[in-house]
Image 1: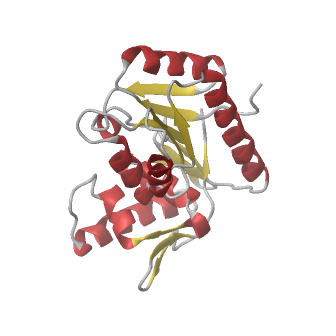
Image 2: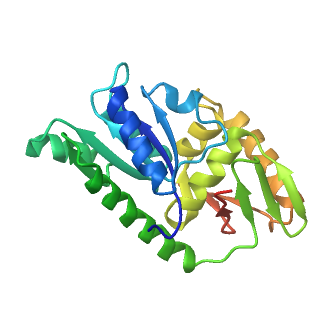
Image 3: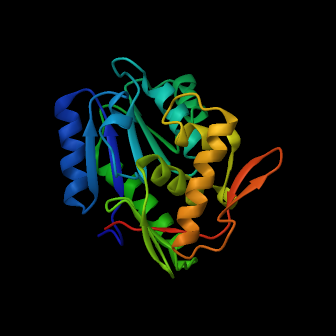
Length: 232
């Protein structure tokens, strides 16, 4: 029995395996989205902030290693499990260097995967018991709620707040912030500041103490107040 549910994205192009993974984890109470290629991650998950990615290496188009690297850069504290038929030491090291927390080899034992997911559940449950926050983010409803009420956010703003909330010291570098607010496209410094200014005003309007997102010279930006991510 898990103590809480996770939001999980499974990227696996072999339909039968993807469906088996999704079914097994759904039976454990998790909310699971299955995708067949890396390019669907940004297109098919609007309003869905993932706690864990399960990624096959051999994907059509962008491969799993590249996807893991991209996810890890923009979401420093999210869980990543790589699944691959490649079992050499070099391949496993490459998987970990790409940002994976766990590297599982095929043929995949679903019970082992479930055990890995349960260990992540326990880690997150322990972390969440140690923090309290009067500010909450609901990715499904696309709103942030504070002492003064709630306000609607865009998908890119939700993604950014979630990444900041999970990051060490709630801090991300400049380019990581730009990657979220630019929706994967290049964004100028001026446009970045405009978008951040708009987000700061939204957070302030629902009661988050200003400045909600602090600029750190030469480093990036820090979320001043912890924001709890709801799994509603």
